[in-house]
Picture (tube, rainbow, N blue to C red):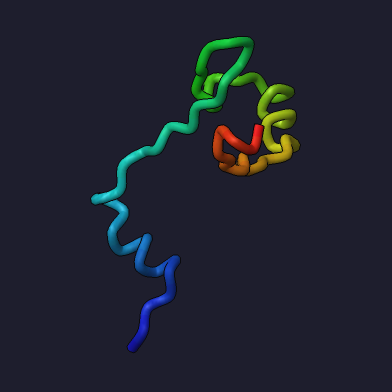
Length: 59
């Protein structure tokens, strides 16, 4: 019988560790969990992007 991802997570709950998410705010890094409710909402609405790598000759 195949287990679902949620069942797998529930079975191994004791082996999991908490993961802190940090974000850069005003030049320094802060954990998102320390934000107030308004700042957490703002963080969820942010647009994430990936930078494109270029060679120095392309500049």
